[in-house]
Length: 531
Picture (tube, rainbow, N blue to C red):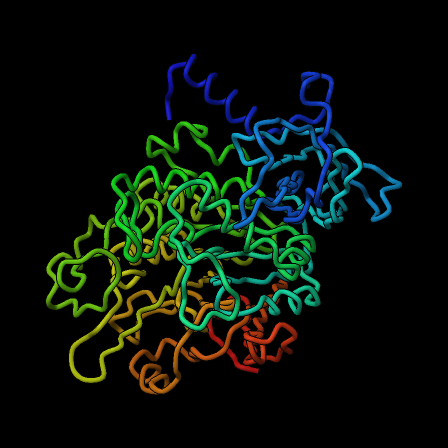
């Protein structure tokens, strides 16, 4: 991006100002130093950390005074929020501290980008405003590039529809002794009014910025989710429901009322997402004004975890070409026989967008980590649902963009990418399989492994045809639609171990948890071994 210098200065200043990243209070106007009287706990949405690097991390909170239906009556006042980062939970050994602005333009959210930290260290943090003190969060920096690391233990999760159940999965995730959580999309669902909801939610569809803010306030009110956010840093990406079901780039999705200007709705959704996630201000590539003009909110990127792993986050919603051959010419997703869809194999169609594809190819070329972990939204491997001759594939995921998938696998081979591991979500089911160079040929090279995780709560389906589908798609070794939960993947120099954890009953707030399956993959040998 090559902006004229005055424009570049303007949007950089705006992004920094709105994100409230100041570390000290000397520059703050007197009008914002005072804190209002609180009728309720202003930190009712909890705290979170994320975007970890070897020397920095983002600390997050949002001030809220409920007005009903998830809205906040914070008003137009800008409020100075103090923060502290310490070596110990008692905050007797302060590492850094400062003040940050909670502005009405950003929903009184706070994003503190703390830099200059020691690598591979755990820290504690908290926020204060007036006499109110937030819950204490725990976060960490990652090991320095090139550092020898013995282990990385990380969870992956997605799809947490509020109405479909309780977040007991997160209560059990807290006991997993994790270094980080990778969240892979559908943090909220933009619509309400599910039949037979376990927990009620507003029946309207989110359209405006206030609508999306209200939904995030509802979802973040859950104590189990709050506690898990406070336990370790999260790496965040999104899918479709953070905006509109099945949307593609600047094309609207399906369900709910038609919106005259979808770009405005998307901009509101993107802003609300930023306001509620521990993200750096640099993701606002042209500040808030740019979102309204259709500019990106850049989530994709990569971060090293010493020499042990590189963690990539991808975004396959914001830049994708629209789905093709949806039934009756409608928008959104559908199952399609590729033989009846001439546009299916158009090599110009993209799921990641040209810039992100090029970035990923360059990142693969430079990488020398032991494990290369790609966090993305959905199932990577081909899933043919046809029971007879021919094929039936989904047009919404990688199957519907097969040329784009081939460009990724070609890049893996061209750059001899070591030990690729793909993590996914979206489909509300566990799918475990091998990443193939060519899914049309079962004998083609196996490049890596994939673990597409089930949902935290969102409805799945029946296992009635799973055995038949596994037989038709032999690169997969396990599938399960019926259980909700998360995955835990542990990396060492020698191997990875992935454990599929599932709750007993998602409609019970005190549900227990068990292990559905566990797999081991030896480094240098992309073969799943069930243990």
